[in-house]
Image (cartoon, rainbow, N blue to C red; front, side, top):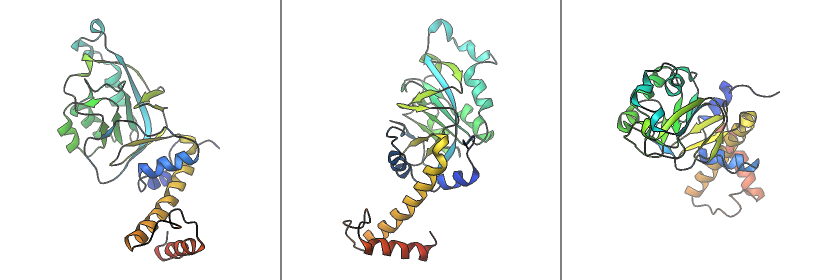
Length: 241
C-alpha cells in the first residue's frame, strides 16, 4: 500500500536521527542527491525539523509584472501559500539558488509559525534573518538577504514539483532538517528509511562509545568481526535499543 501521509511513528523516528545518517540510508537505496545544497539553518534549534513538503516556485522577476502593488492582490501566490501551507508541513521555496533578494521575511514566517507550519526552507535568502532566527520555527536558507523578493523573484505557483538547492522536491515529500542542513525523502520510502536510520543511529552510538574508550575502527566500523557483532548485541540489550 502506498503511503499518503507521514505517520506519527515515523515522524518521531525522524526527529531522532541526523541528516547525515538519513543521506547514507538513502544512498543504500540508490538515491545520491537528496541533501539540499548550500542551505543551512538561520539559527540552530534543539530538535529536528520534520514535515511533508508544500512548495512555492519563483521565476525571475520582470519589472512590468512585479511592482510593489502586486501584494495588494489577495491571490498573490506567496501570500496564499503562507495562508494555505498545512500545519505540520514544511514550506519549501524554489528561489533558483538566488539569495540576492529575499524569499520571505519575518512577518510571513511568523504567520506560518502561528499557523503551525513545521518549517521553511529556501535555496535563496531570508530578510529579517535575526528576527527569523529568534522564532521557534526552524528555517533554512543560503544567506541573509535584505531586498524584497520582487526585485529578483516572481511567485508563480504553489504545490507543484520544484527544484531546491539542486534537489527535486515533490509535494508531500518528507523534509528533515537539523544543524547541518536539509534532506528530502520520497514519501513512498520514508517508513523504511526512518527505520534504517534509527538502526544506524543505534550502531553509531555504540561505535562512538567504543571509540571514546580507545577501540580501533578496524573490525568495528563496520562490524566485520564476531567479537564486534557480539559486543553490539550485548550493548543493545543493555540500552534497550
